[in-house]
Structure formats: C-alpha cells, structure tokens
Amino acid sequence: MAPASDEREFTKAGIYAAIAAWIGMVIGPNSMVSASMSLFIKPLTGEFGLTRTEVSALLLISPWTNAIFSPWAGRTMDRWGLRRVLLPGALLFAVASMARGFATSPWQLAIGFFVVSIASAMNSSVGYAKLVSLWFSNHRGAVLGCAIALGAGLGSAIAPQVMRIVIQDHGWRVAYFSLGAFVLILPLPALWFLIREPAKTVTERALAAGQLLPGLTRNEAVRTKSFWLIFFAILLASMALIGTTAHAVPLLTERGFSSLIGTTVVSCFFFGGVAGQLTAGFIADRVNSQRVVLPYFASALVGAMIVHRATSVPVLLGGALFMGLGQGAEIAFAAYLTSRYFGLRAYGSIYSIFYAASNIGIGIGLMSMGLAHDHFGTYRLMAYVFGAALIIATLCIALLGPYAYASRKTLARVAPLDDAATGSR
Image (tube, rainbow, N blue to C red):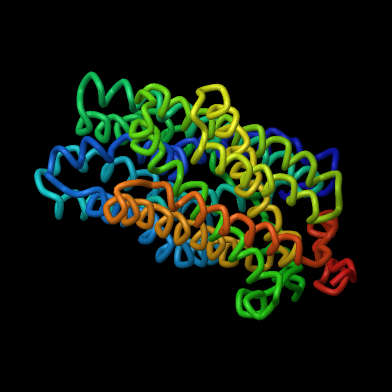
C-alpha cells in the first residue's frame, strides 16, 4: 500500500520504484536522443547531401512529435496506469532506434524519428516522475532529484562520449542500432520487474471514499497564471539551452575547437545537469519557496553566453557546467513545481504539457540554429536571441506566487482538496 508516514516511505517496494525511475530516465529521450543529437548533424549531412537546415528539420521531428504525443501519454498514464504505457514505450523505442540505422533515404529516416518520438513520449520522465510521486511524499524532491540526476543527467553526460567513439569507429548507422539494442537487452527487462504502483493507490482509496486526490484538473490548471509562467519559462529555457547543445559540436568546431572538445563540452553540460538536478531536489524539500529556482536560471544564462563566446578551453568547459547546472535544475523543478502548484489529481496530464513545452522549445532552438547558420554563415546571432530568451524565462519564474500545495503529508492521509491546500494561493 502507499506509504503512510515519513518513516515508511523507504520501503523495499518504494526503493524498487525509485530504481525503476532511475533506469527509465537513463533510457529516456534526454539521454538517448537530445544528448547525442549534435554528433549526428555532420554525418547525416554528408550521407544524404543535406544542408544544415534540412538536417535540423529532420532532427526537429523528435522534439515536436514528442510534444504532440506527450499530453496523450500523460492522460493515458493517469487513466490506465504506468506499466501499460511505460513498458510498451520502452520496447517501441528500442525497436525504432535500431531501425533508424537501416535508413537509406531522408524520408525513411524521418519515419524512424517519428516513431522514436512517439515511443519517447510514452517512456518519458512524466511517467517516472509520477511513479516516484506515488511512493514518496515528504522526500519527493530528493528522490526525484536523485532519479533525474543519476538517470537523465548522468546518462546524458556519458552518452555523447560513447556515441562519439561508435560513430568515429563504426559510423552513425551502428550508433543508432546500438542505442536500441542496449535498451532492449538490459534496461527493458529490469523495468518489467521493477515498475510497480502501490498495491492500493491513493487514487483508489480516494475514489472509494468519495474523495479526490488534492489538486487541480488539467482544465483548472491551464486557467491559472502560474501554469503559463511555468510553461513559457520551460519553453524558453529549453529553446536556448538544448538548442545550443544540439549544435554544440558544429558550433565549436567552426570556431577552431576539435570535435573532442565539442563532445566534452556537451558532456560537461550534462555533468552540470547532474549537479543541478541533485541540489535542486534536496533544496526543494527544505526551502518552501519557488525563489530557489532563480539562481539556477541565472547560472544557465551566464553559462550559455560563455559557450557562445568563449575562446579558451577552460572557460568554455566552465560555461558548459554553469549552463548544465541551470538546465538540470529546470528538469528537476518542472516535475516538482507541478505537484506544488497543481497537486497530484491530474499530475500526469499537467506535467506532460510542461514536458511538451520543453520539446517545443527544443525544436524551435534546434531549427533556429540551423536557419541562422545557413542564412548568415555563422551561429553568432543566436547568442543574443538565446540570451534574451533566458532573461525572459528567469522573469517568468520570478513572477510566480507562493506554492499552493506546500505539504505532501496530506496525500498519505487522502485528505480532501480543501484540507490539502495550504491556503497560500
């Protein structure tokens, strides 16, 4: 059954769920798709004779298709449970990833990206964040932070280095095939045994008592100012940060850095993300204010400007760490803020929209970098565009009001909505 007290949260079943969330985030779209994206730009350009904009358009299929299907996946998880969505999603991701390695034309590759993106929406951090939220209440921020940091964060830091070696030694086709084969052979069987929701979930007990989980419905949430402030903060930050990272290797090699340095910058970005995710989770559990997010967004702004302008390797790597620190916190806080501002009543549906916002931003950033390069012959203009985007994202966070659902203990007691709210709206 669901944990009833702070002491009982770390049960064997709860720990298994946390491990499942960690594994799921390792093979999620952040590490398996976004982290290595920039490494495939030049190989695909050479293979199919495409321009930088055309390759960006191909890569754009992933985040935008993910954005379209994420709300559907979130609603399905809320209605049918996590196993029925996460496990088929992981299987489809593995098979579709391997299939991309056999593409012989851009349209075949486009179909591969499309299917991979549907699978990514089904096997995203939305479901794994909900899994953690069902098992953990008082330590939710810390467990979420650890799962995201050691899963999406660490996986994203390691994946580019592995993919660089595979592409260099065996080509991009083997790299895509290897991604899918890895998911199929190791993580998927583990997830089959580890993904378990509480035997009698909070939702079931609430419905039996004629009550609802504390929180807003999706329609109620989208009518609040907080929803749209978070939505645009995530969209703009993702546009600037992942847009930069997706083109990091060509961006830096054209400034005279080696491909090894470019890949190392990407890895440093995601190592910084690990630090951001870990610290954000622990701080969120201890500081009852959304203001703790602001230093992370400021760090992302400073780091992004350094990456776009730095001419020395130490400064460049430091900028990547700062940029990643902000991006990592954004990922962790997106899951956390959803429960704090809107509760768990429609957690999957609401968080999936924020996840979609992130993917919309990634697509815009990815495409705008390609267009700017093809039109102006340089990425230089995008430093100003992305800088402005990060400033606006920081202002959105600064304008958020106090948390509406400051206590998690009410979830274990299945308290009514009015009792769960803190009165701090």
